Each structure stands twice: as structure tokens, then as C-alpha cells.
Length: 445
Image 1 (cartoon, rainbow, N blue to C red):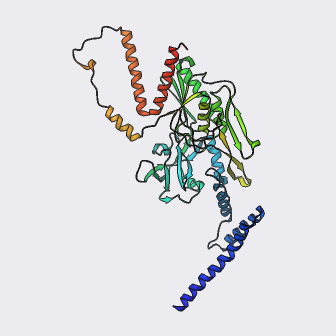
Image 2: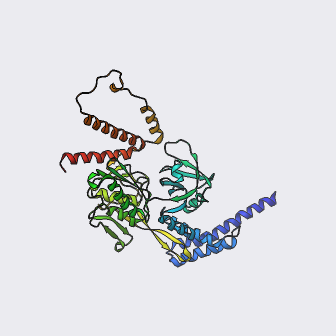
Image 3: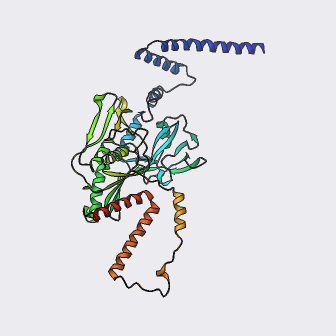
């Protein structure tokens, strides 16, 4: 027993001595101004100690990449190191086709937060929502992983299954979601018409966004019989996580004749840039409603902020994500790259939306799916009217054409009610544009 106590005491004493010997130089270096080269020498010393004395043999390449990534991720959630594979995957994503789940994510308090699911992707079809917190992937915690490491865990062969554990606001307990990985083919712009309103749904800002927007708008306007037959345009940016700054500028320019679109300001004043609109408006002055929500980030916020500041559009929905920084991808030797935050962007009025987001002109919440289904079931009860009664009197005050017109108006009203059940925010936007059109007609415009 005495020998054991002596050995233990010796071990403690040895540990104390070693700790003192290592800590003393560190404290001394912190107490005096140190050059960058001295700090790099310190890094080299630590690297050699780890490489030579760590309990297991280490992969030096991975060790250095982890050190680089740790340096970058300590700056902000959007700066990171991209390995050659990650750099290649990012280039593929900007072209609009890649494999995975179809979610844009960021990191918050060590966990992975969903910025937005992409339309029609496995994550979207599985019910993943903007704001969801991913805590586990296939039963393993993502706490402590870098963003890139967590994303790597979620990647896998097309057709394979992944189970992610989600914490969602409004749910008392975490729950699992099973998703089948698939090839993600992003359609940058989806276009449709709601009565005489053109709805342009932008899912991302990649190389195809502006060309798709221009061609889709022209196609739908032609279907309605020309711009004179169009009441307005809905630019749906909900759950659009952003993308290329150049595409955000082009989309904003499409609806602005003049003025500043966005400015960027870096560390040095001379590095700032201003981007201005050029003459020409694809909408020919027709009113525009921009739809945003908490999943609208980055490039989406540039477009919403520019059109809002120029009073070119009414912004409807809920506050956007609030990512007001610009990342520059810088290639490195060996085909890797770093993604570094190099500037903040500002809307035409000079406001930064960093961590604040774009506030809508009209706040409209989207009812949750369960609440929508419950409301729909209550409204499904059949209602009887005078027209259903046997032996009713006929209406002799209207002509057949007038009765037909009333029936057509009723049919349009039913379509509006259907849209309101499917997508309340979009229905609200369409109603705004219809109201503006009626006002314009009554004023003889």
C-alpha cells in the first residue's frame, strides 16, 4: 500500500512539474509582445509534439487541415477550409446539380441549424423546416463537429437512408426523420400563374437563376396575353438560402431602372464596392410583392432589401434569416480552398441586415400544416343555400350573361379560397396585387 501511495504521489509530482515546465514558457510568451513568427514557431513545436508523442499515429495531412479549419471557424460560422473534395462539391452546387438531402445548413451553439430545405428535395418532402436543429445523424451526436464534418456525415450514396434527429420549436421532444438520399437537381426558378398574377418561385441563386427568371417571366406573360393583362408579379423567395452575389444583383436589376442595388464594405475602405441598376424593367412597372420568411438568406435578402428600399415592391411574410456577410472562395495549392468572410453588404438605404434580417412591410405568418389541415376539415362541412331548396323562385332580374359572369366570379373566389388553404402567404400576396389592380382601374390608370 505504501508503495502504491508513493507511486501515486510521484506521478502527481511529475505531472505538476511537467505542467509547470510547459505552462511557464506559454505564460511568458503571453506576457510580452510576440511576433507572428514566434507564434508560428509555437504552432510548429506543438505540431511536432503531437506527431511524435500522441498515443496513436496521426495523419499529418488531416492534422494540418483540422488546424486550418479550426482557425477559420473561430472567426465566424461562414468561414471554413474546403478540402479538394469539398471545393469540387461547392462548384457543382453552383451549377445546380449535386447529391445529398437538399438542405442549406449553418452552425449554432455547436449544433446544425437548417437555414432552409430546397423545394422538391428529399429533405423538403420529408417535412424538414427552416429553423430545425439537427442534433444527431444516424444516432451519433453532431455536437463538437465542425460544419463541414457534420455535412460530410449527412452525405452518402444516392438511394441510401439517413436518420436525423431534429429539435423543432413548438415540439416538446426531439424526433427522428428518415430521409433517402437522392441526386439534387435544382430548378432555380419555377413559374406559375394565379389568375392574372405571375408567381416566380426562386429556390436558389446559381448560374441559372437570372436566365431562368427572364425566360419564365416572358413565357407566363405571353400565356396571359401580354403585360397589359398582368395585375402584378409575386417574387417568392421563401426558404431560398441564397447563393451567388452576382445573380442577386442581376435579379434585382431586372426590376429596377436605376439606383444602387447593394454595396459591400470590407476591412479597408478602398475595398468597398457599389452595384447600381441599369435601365430596363422586365415587369414594365407592374406592382411586385416579395415573399420572405426565416429561411430567406443572403442573396435573397439582397433582392428583398433592394426592392424594398426603392419602394419597388411590397415585402410580405416574416423576418428573414439575417446573413449580411459576403464570403470569398480563395483557391489554394493542392485544389483545396478557403471560404473567408471578406465584407458586409448593405442595402441601398445603407442598412446592414447582419443578424437583424429584412423586416417585411406586412407581417404575415404561415399557418403550420397541422393547423391548416384542422381548419380545412372544419370548412369541409356542406352548406346549403336558397339555390338548393326545392321549388325555389328563379331570379328574373339578371340576364343569362350577367348570371354567367357572377358564376365566373364565384369560381375565381373559390380558387382564391383553395389557394389560401394551400399557401396562405401566397394567397395574401395575390390579394394585394389584385387590390392594387382594382385601384389602378378605378383611377383610370
